[in-house]
Image 1 (cartoon, rainbow, N blue to C red):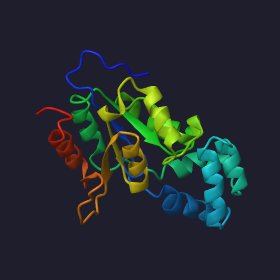
Image 2: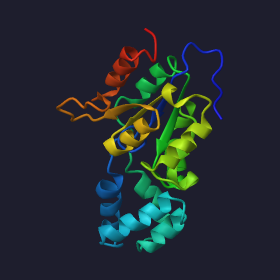
Image 3: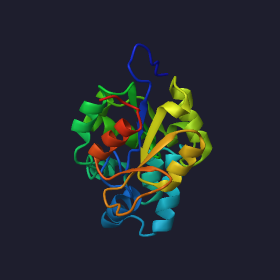
Length: 215
């Protein structure tokens, strides 16, 4: 549990992984399914999605996922190498960590993949805890995963600002009392349900405007 003591702000910044921390939001459709097909595995995107969901709920381990889609688990690291950080993430984390009480991650993901990626990029120096669907057995936007987030933090929901690239996840977060920001680099119109940021500087602006951090 993250204890917030002796800080100027009680704000916790919670970041989604795919589409916020990592550049590709639809990793299943844009990275995983093509990778499996290119390596001679399943060409059925519906089946791949079903197996992925099972793995991201912790119902099957990563090794079983690869076997079910017709590939060797030894290809896992090659697949994960396709993931890149969203441009501007690292300087943003370096800056914002001085302004908030903590940064955490709330993500739908396969536990082994989440761990490998954050170790690869050294993200634990900025982000902890990681509340991952496969670890808690619940996927966003189900309410239980937000309860799991609350159980990992020593702050009330109103002190959490959650950044995600999917409005459904943000709607559920807002219903749980969390402040929300839609991260959408291509957004052309204002979103009236959530704050909207097209880049990491936009997140900083919203944190300042909302009084979550001080100048």
